[in-house]
Length: 110
Image (cartoon, rainbow, N blue to C red; front, side):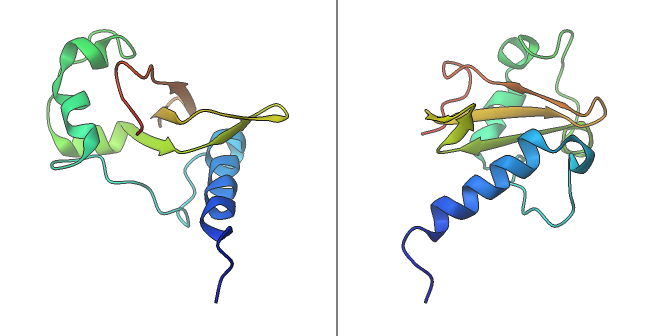
């Protein structure tokens, strides 16, 4: 049986891999959160005003294009320097190999 702290440790490792390891920006062995229909991310992607704050000129086209270009991941906690911070939603721009933090008003993690 895994210790009770295992889910937190697992999330910490995932956070480190996908936020800070640029050479493994979107590793295949990470289980990515779903971002399509019926998810918390759906309303973000369908709201051009909200998504446009991060992606100038954004318009929703289709789920295949969204999945090929972008990924939103949420974290209950993550490390910034030496301290653990509040929850984070990160928008990954896959082609550019970078990520942006989403404001809580635009994408509430909890």
